[in-house]
Length: 118
Image 1 (cartoon, rainbow, N blue to C red):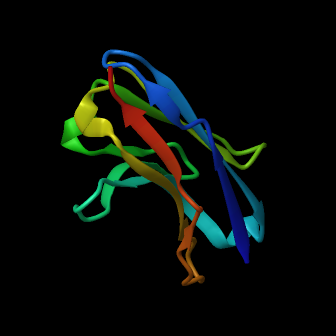
Image 2 (cartoon, one colour; image 1 turned 180 degrees about the vertical axis):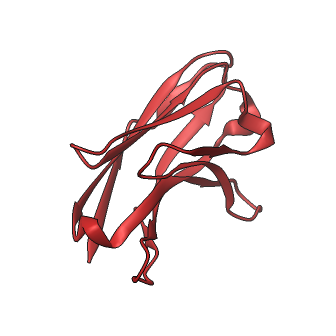
């Protein structure tokens, strides 16, 4: 079992920045990729960014050049630095941990609200 705890959401003006953090605890060996998804009202949950244990990254086209995902394997923590935020970035952001080889469970955090508004 893996427990994910997110922090860092909030209200920010357009053009501003936020950093989200997600700390994993429990059976860390059972996970590999960690990342962030988001869900806006009335929309499907979508991938924002992901990073493997080895550091390979993947970004949604809508956030490339503005968001940066990073990971501290020693702290079992993944970060999402969000710059140049836009109103359309408003959503609940969920931390996700995908299974390592030999495991099958996908884990989710409770979500943190990010609101971009003036």
